[in-house]
Amino acid sequence: MKVYTETKDKILTVVINRPEVKNAVDRETAYELSRAFREFDANDDLYVAILCGEGDTFCAGADLKAVADGSGERANSLEPDMSKDGPMGPTRMMLTKPVIAAISGYAVAGGLELALWCDLRVADEDAILGVFCRRFGVPLVDGGTQRLPRLIGMSRALDMILTGRPVTAKEAYDMGLVNRVVPNGMARQEAESIASQISRFPQRCLRSDRYALYRGFDLDFNKAMELEFSYGLEVISSGETISGAKQFTGGTGRHGKF
Image (cartoon, rainbow, N blue to C red; front, side):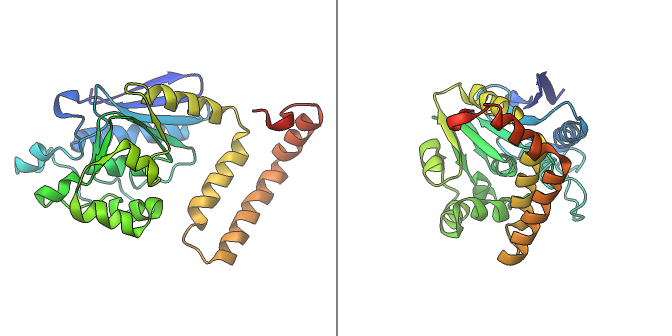
């Protein structure tokens, strides 16, 4: 089993299970990742997912041994139809629910692209991120050139993409590439803590705000404002907002308490 899942309360953890190759992703692994996240998105009992790697590595990217064998059977799929799965699996999906990457060790090349696909990234303090595929003529074809500059800006993204240099967890945090840096071995635990907090919020509103951000990011500002407002009205019409207001008047969440 190249990918396995664990469920706790409303949280699904998806684990890349190929520690013998630093959790590199071949065609079958990509397929299993896609299937796991499709099932997560379709399951109304699950609110947040965590993506991590077995052992001491998040993901070293595409399995270059599978690429090098020349048969094409194990190599990552290169499907040009964007409605199909990406080379690393779920990276073309727009899920309705958030995913948190728990990064231990290396998140490089396609592994970096998987982490970029996630909504949030938590990293061990010794984690390393980078476009290591620069050394071998392997292009970023799964969102790296598009998501990276949207997260950290074009100048920093070009630095990483052109040089392929290793980026430490601290530098990644400073540039906004990761959201939390924690002591070694604690990335998954911290991701679980964040996921638990997120899972306790009213979900329709949370998912609406998340989707409005993604959908509106590249729109004209006024169009994005209209989009946000229309999504917000749907939440209000659902009754979730009135229910929350009644909880507040009853004393829940006063003084900024979460």
